[in-house]
Image (cartoon, rainbow, N blue to C red; front, side):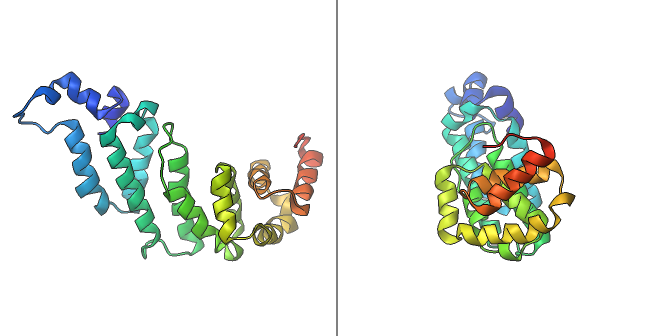
Length: 218
């Protein structure tokens, strides 16, 4: 299905080109029906690794896929399944499983066609509640994801988790060993902190980046 959408754009287009849309007694299942069947019967049984593989295949889907009703049903089902996995025992809140959550988030927000989905918001909202107990790599990854969110999404996260609480955890995890962080890690942290608003921590990190690496940051 993914290969077909990457090549033809829409299941509806593939059905029209094949003539399936005009057939009333075809022996083969048309692509739109396949999309709906996958959404209803296959996607709900996918595990976390399956979901990662499926989302990786969506990377090549064109922007016009948003106009396909059949593809939307499939995407909605995938989104719902990812959200369901957040509540499952497979996604405990230990740091080593947060990598899976961040991976799914990154895959969703990296799609070219940018579907309307809820998983990234719900994932970051859940992770933010535990950011104070998380390891430094998780904090940096959290900030990198936060930097890619829209303003209303960031506001939603900050409704449940104060910016001061998150900044406090950032200070504890990053500033004591700031000289040991790589340039990309510090830039990721900085772009996420910008979304939290101006603060002493942001000013201090900006000053370090400008003096250490010669950046000109606003």
